[in-house]
Image 1: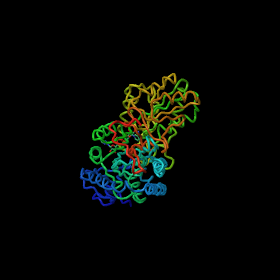
Image 2: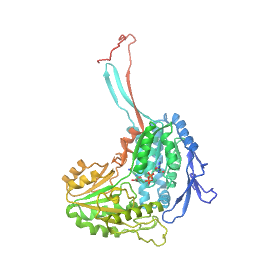
Image 3: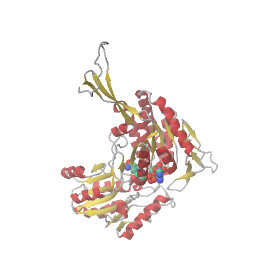
Length: 509
Ligand code: NAD
């Protein structure tokens, strides 16, 4: 049994704890929310919505810990990350089961969620060469200039439900290894796998107060974004909330990075490898029930590739909808009943707007899991760009298909969409791919790669409605985000008789 979750509540359901100053503590709040298995509706645990005093205590613990943690030698910080990555690897199967139970995705996909976060922890272990400053000798007579990359202080992280392992691991390991302390606010929908990872961080040697966790919703998030001791806020989630977090945090003088919603297009040219492209579209469109920020949600068939549509529908029909822990499942349930209702509402809006349902997943039945939040693969054709199903992030297993005659028109279409997170081009033409990567205004571009999430030594990015703030998570950019550059200009005298006299003008060197 995890320390972060106890069995002690009156209702007989486990309570998720807060982590404040190295202790897993029970919240004193009166507001709780059930964590529900989306395949069965079983209540797995309850999560507290922390009080303002508890948020304040977490931030103050982080602030106090910063005084010593910032002086911890870089090698000691690196060694904690080395131990942490080994622990995550060892506990991956156990945490994947928790993740599947509370979030719904398949077990192999849950392991993938943890693995992509693990890679960031591995990269954090090389901070010794990432956090180096610069040095220029003799910028003026006997004067040297160099920079220090110093930690900021208390950083906060707010994470979404769809990657409860990967996204917290995008944030606190890199923040901490740079010498900051951290307050994490996981998604209130599935915080148990996040807490299992937090427990391992303590086991790896993260000292008390360096990592803290508070749970909750808007009130807790707003308290973090406006707390005087918080220096930086990392947010990943929807565009509406991310925009609010960016504004509120910036108003209170914090650095903010907001990674937000998406509508990812896959552009298919007729010269593409047909079978590989259809595989990629079905996997990226329907995997994780479409609940990935990098899921393909729009297919743009260019010219003669329009004839591939029936094959795409047939490919979608082969995918197996079932509970995430069942072997052979391709598509698990949506995270909540509310999420399912929202997606059903959007499908209905597409029908009403005149789009054609080439494949309708609404009536899918999953024997043994009749109460699960399932929607089967759904494909819309005859879609126009003014329809809600084109403009809104559906975040469900729904592909909308548009057709255009040329690559130029496909590029213009993608660049007009309100979002700019990910895009894929499927072609065998190097010239088309080069033109596409140059002209497309999207953060992550895949060439024959359906979900081009960068590995941790690059950085995740985004355009338009998908990102606010200039520096993205992980990679070199996040080291800049989590550190403050200080420039030192220094001169030393080795001769006690040196006397330049008083100079009241700016030096001309
Ligand atoms: P969400 O915006 O509803 O929630 C994100 C976080 O904000 C949660 O911790 C939540 O508790 C908090 N929150 C919710 N409402 C709030 C409010 N009114 N004020 C302050 N805080 C609030 O997002 P979600 O549904 O958990 O996640 C799905 C979204 O995340 C999708 O839009 C997806 O595209 C996006 N996402 C983006 C990326 C990326 O890197 N660009 C990665 C993963 C997910």
